[in-house]
Image (cartoon, rainbow, N blue to C red):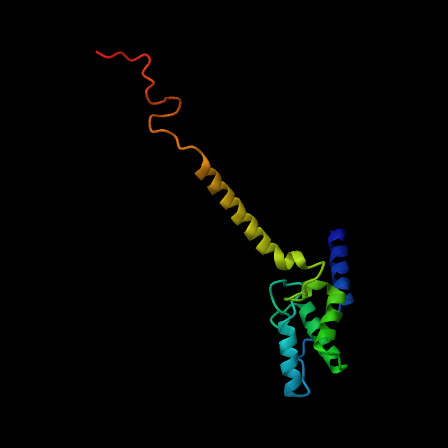
Length: 153
């Protein structure tokens, strides 16, 4: 009983220790800023949802990231600088289209390499089977003219 009460108090304290983000909608200075913001957040991935863009995600981290993007835009940073800031903080995963580089070449070219490897394997198997000698219709181990053991009447 005392352990349950202690756990409830600890959970309540933890909930108060992490303030919820500002849930109020973002306010844009003008339409150009809003268009740029939406275009930029559509190119960024939510680090929690993984398959949703930053613009589409309702996760708390996505709300925080959207506010960060808007703040960086208002500081006069370019789209590339905003993306670089988020990549430095969250890694290449935050980009839907990461740059081709030493760390991402497998991401870009891996599927093609797997497809080529599979096609090469299929070609090799088909070629090997086509080159194998065809089995005679009389069955394995028996040759035409091999009439030993048969008597003519």
